[in-house]
Length: 158
Length: 237
Image (cartoon, rainbow over all chains, first blue to last red; front, side, top):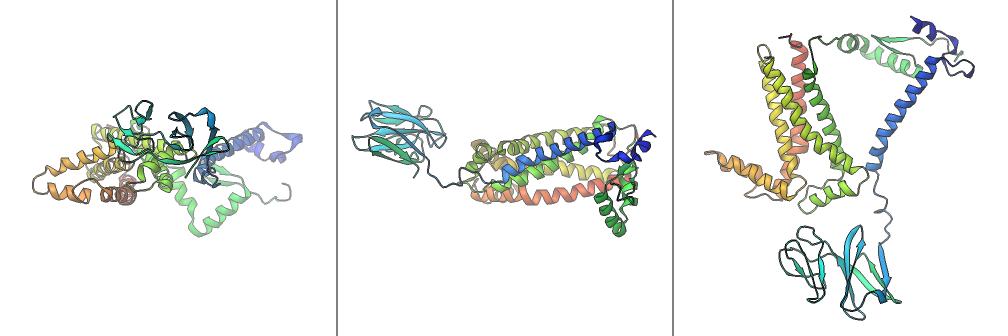
């Protein structure tokens, strides 16, 4: 019964002079409900919005000092959020490719003596250009563009 | 506040609305559809029998999960590509690249598992309480058909990510019916769209998963619920 008495009170709206316990609780509940709805809608909107990084059209690039990589050596790095490897074939020629084996996604290892990339999981073998030379991989390793420019090795997405 | 003295209280059963916009909307709908009468009778003053317990809720829980599956399924369909070249990549992208994609896919994945569990609990409750008996035999038939449809959802949905696991599960799941006498080979060919799991299989599994099964399920759910409304909830044991 006290409910209807309070409801007929003139200060039913938000009046600083006369904030009843009921109006305060109502406001808190309305606020929480609004926050809950917003919290549910935010992931939905983010999910449906296109991914920002894919929109800019800017090519990802990675570079190191050319002196850090000697001829016949390989260096592993992270490119496009995945492991990648660059190999210096000669003074002027560098190759860069994904280090993810095309068979089942293991990370290939560099074998310096054989000058070859090998997958430790099922023995897939790739030459220094990423071509399959043995084992089960169905496709060559994904290639990136690599060049030596002003004393730096620059890797870019093709 | 004081310049609108005409504000009144709107009573829908135990629920009270005191809001000008809601009042206007209510008047608008009330004039045209006389909703108050229906809502009072069907929702606000309709009471559940007191003998219902937690186990009686599993049909409703299953329905709730089904609604979540529809919602998350629609969201997944925005990014999923039903093509053998791109299916796996698109699922990886949903999980790793799309913001909150892992939540959507996770909800769909676990929802599917949970739905099978809750539907079985619901079936067990109906069976062991003898609720399937006359006059509710037809609703038992509808329910078992819905269980089979849920299994169909699970089977077709399992192939869609195009992983090793889903590929071989489909190979086994289509080899099994091929052992049936006479119709076995035809069934297998019909399911696969050929002699092996291929793009044709993925395409038809996708069509069945996102169109044929949902439409059939929603129609049968309507029949399931209408029968309950007409026959009432069964009495205590």
